[in-house]
Length: 218
Image (cartoon, rainbow, N blue to C red; front, side, top):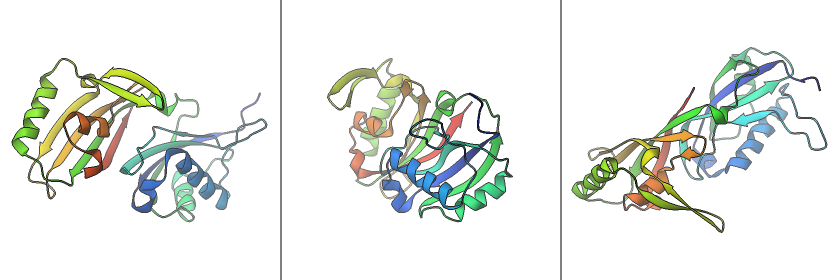
């Protein structure tokens, strides 16, 4: 079947404000709604249930702020990237800002297979003992493995958290109670989650403001 697209554009966007509570599937719908409202010439899949040819790099945990989310879209008509960006932003939902659009190879690999790592800034909202926390960080980084349980619905699976942590540090003098900086693996089947790392450090994820700073892709 002949392809119905002629261009692939990559959108870089931030997600904050009320949009931080939009889930992954709903985010795709929000983007699609904006595309439809401005009549963006985006390609659709063929078949009984057509949907936009759009691909997200990775899901963002609910409630997490992000400065760098990535989505690829396939177009039926060639557009200048900046023209497409301005058109999309003219009808975009509050809290989402598409700040860069660039053309990428039409038949390049999928975004999900190209992600490498993700940077996070985690602002602590409760007072912590800096000496104890730094000790836990050192012990975790010095360990060969740190086995934990990951639950998805009724399924339970053991995994090793340690290889998923690339860097981890605590800035005691930032924010009200300090800030954690972490770079976590974002490779297929090897994804580190900031909330799980907080639990491993004895911290409550609900007492932290998680902010994704950057996604590294190949």
